Image (tube, rainbow, N blue to C red; front, side, top):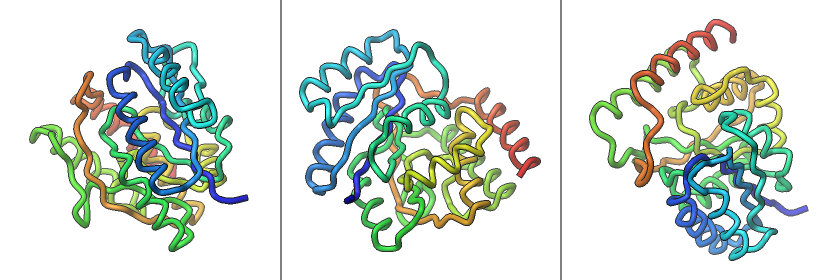
Length: 238
């Protein structure tokens, strides 16, 4: 069996972003020539995201766009576990549906993975030309602070722990997720902590993270406090 890449996209109120994102994924993945599918896990968005996803499925076909909606807003970690059940590829790509992650980086992830047979390739905003676009000082500070705290406590083999743009061997992701206890933002980080415990290999590709164009961002001061609490819990238990 050749390589096949499954892009898991949990969505909640992303009807404005989804068509652009899917178009970009199609463009860069078709150019790269790799076999791929996109699994959209919509958590009952009130804005009509699922209807938009159905239109996209009509345009691109049911082999490329697989819809697996859920009945309510059940969180990121569970969305990935749920989506994984339907992934037919042997590699899985996790990314955000709000256009903060540009699909043009995916072929770079795949390339690096192939060259070094890595278990995980993680996009990083924090080294070798990676960065953040459109964030004010406060957001940058919160993000850097979260990352610094994570590095200090968890010492993973990765420079960007709080990002969620990654490529995994499917079996590796399944194994890491099975031992995760966190939900939400900390989940991204815990996956890398578990990966380190298992001794999986991690490579990094510099990415530029773009602040969302439509809708509202989900990371503010209150989330940061919650995040820090979860982080300390993770530190205490690993």
